[in-house]
Image (tube, rainbow, N blue to C red; front, side):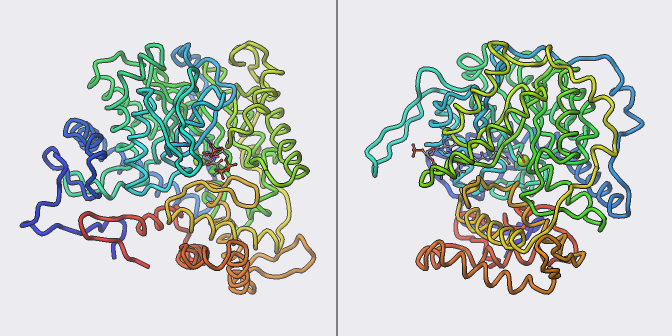
Length: 567
Ligand SMILES: CC(=O)SCCNC(=O)CCNC(=O)[C@H](O)C(C)(C)COP(=O)(O)OP(=O)(O)OC[C@H]1O[C@@H](n2cnc3c(N)ncnc32)[C@H](O)[C@@H]1OP(=O)(O)O
Ligand SMILES: O=CC(=O)O
Ligand SMILES: [Mg+2]
């Protein structure tokens, strides 16, 4: 059994287990593979190790600060604007000009770094493809290493995929989307790579390997002299953005490229970060291409931040959308902040995906996406996210109808009215009711998502919606919160207390999952393990910070013969 911070396996000294050629202090515990070795070269690993050594202490400090903030929120404090950085919020600075290659980002498709999906996404007609090591990826050694290979082939333009069952060969079109890469969040370790006896920081591995192998080609073929481009997830405070800025500067120096070449969009997807948007842009002002409304993690973060506040319980997940006052305020303030600083204000992801076998439901899903995008473009967003290639046309039409040929709305929609938004607006309690069906759906979705994640899929279609780590987190923390505070389901007139029924609901929903997926798939899949992890987290006396941190222990496989076996 292994646990976080205790990846204690040491190989017998007589056996040579590292077939990879590694620099001093680096130990690869993931499976050896000739293809992986082309990514895990000694020089690339040296770069990752240099990043790790320079930034491990600032990262540890930033994670300690998160804990300290959590302690304060749990004691009743509310997040808010920091008086000490008022001069940044009120100052008249701007970020570096937007690189011409990414001035127009009206529709961005996202997806995991899976080979066929990368080709489909780059060919989808979207302006940008965000290739995801984060919410949409289960970070197994295989997925991560193959993801790096796939991205390298994509940047070199040689990526192909042969689908033998359908006799179809996939390759890139002449015109493709611009590539952004999203590394994991700061909190996730990479337990297959040890540096100086400690697991590496996941995002430094994702960033370091991708940057090292691709910066030169990318700048020539995709970035028009700029790049590579990144999305940065789950930050809570500008001190974390400052670390990324230093990482970028170090990478630029190593590569001998100009400061400001690397550009990144930061997802504002934690509640504390909404009060730090100017500060985050300020830290990254030489490297920024804007902010994005990561709405799903943001909702998750609302519950997490207020885990000690019984007066801030969420209604059913389906009712917490972008039209809730606190969500609309966050999006409006993000637009105002970005445009004032001269960068993109990106919208977020509607979870609907095409529904093949039901035209009426399909049209209803498209209508919801259309409405969401209309709201975004009207509010002043410069672009949006699409979960599926089938949605690109619809999203593109909405943005083009509103923006015409203008690449973005940075100069045209300033949203100065949003400067009046207050802490109260940003924290306003979500309105709505809690129902038995909401509880059941959270249970069913959470367990099925986790079962998929444990078997290598980080994004899945469930009940006609895209589900990924961020959406599954909402299901988990919502149940936790309802159990913790003994919530009564007030939306369906049943008046049932969640604590009284949760055990039975889990049993019934597991039976329903088995019926829906079929006995065979249920037996072969990891549904029972997922149920165990999910219910343990939902009923824990203190809230786990991340669903995937605990679950990560179950997918770590150490080479040559060590298999994580916590189950
Ligand atoms: C909260 C957040 O962080 S949002 C960002 C992170 N989440 C994501 O990126 C989710 C992205 N979306 C997806 O992963 C997928 O759309 C899913 C899992 C939801 C559904 O995928 P599927 O079940 O494969 O959908 P479906 O069967 O309709 O796919 C049809 C085709 O579109 C492709 N496709 C679907 N989604 C994508 C995508 N996002 N990128 C590229 N190709 C895609 C499929 O590979 C398939 O290709 P094929 O016809 O050549 O075989
Ligand atoms: O990463 C995006 C989100 O909504 O979460
Ligand atoms: Mg997210």
